Amino acid sequence: MNRFVIMTVGKTHSGKTTFAKSLEKEIPNSVVIDQDNHAEFLNTYYQRLTPKQGPNNIKYALTQTIVDFAVNETNCHVILCNSNRNRKGRLKLLEHFHNKGFTSILVTFDIPQHVLMERIAKSQRSTEILQTVSTFKEVLTRQQDETNKGDVIEPEDGEADHLFVIQNVNEVHSVIQKIISSISN
Image (tube, rainbow, N blue to C red; front, side, top):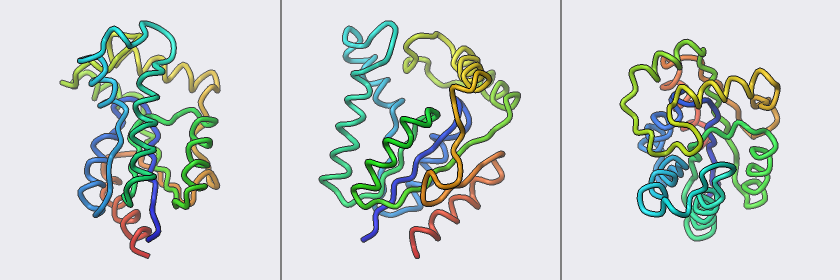
């Protein structure tokens, strides 16, 4: 069986988690691995172990353990649901999956900034996952600053076996259908 890794890429509140959960329902034998869940778990049960600033190495280690288990101990397709905005890290992760025989799909959420701000304003989402900031507005501002400085490079053709771009919510269903078609062939 050819296994797939589907990686979401995008800013906060762009729809990555909703998309991943919908995709998981449509693809038999798939699992969503979402770092936000890991951050919330660590902040709930192991808050003393989470850093107050700098990289959250324990979250990354937990995620890596779960990814390794999914890759090595199951035959599941893997849906990685986190921002994946750093190109160097994204390429390293994709290489790891390619070396394990996975076919890769990147789904980029290129949602306009004003739409993201509106979503944040209406959001009921818990801020428990946040580490170095206290609001999602701060997260979005930081992400936009990274983009403006050129610290973040959006996915390009050739990074993965398949690349899909979602610019508005109306495109989600058709992208899910295209991914299902790719996996079925």
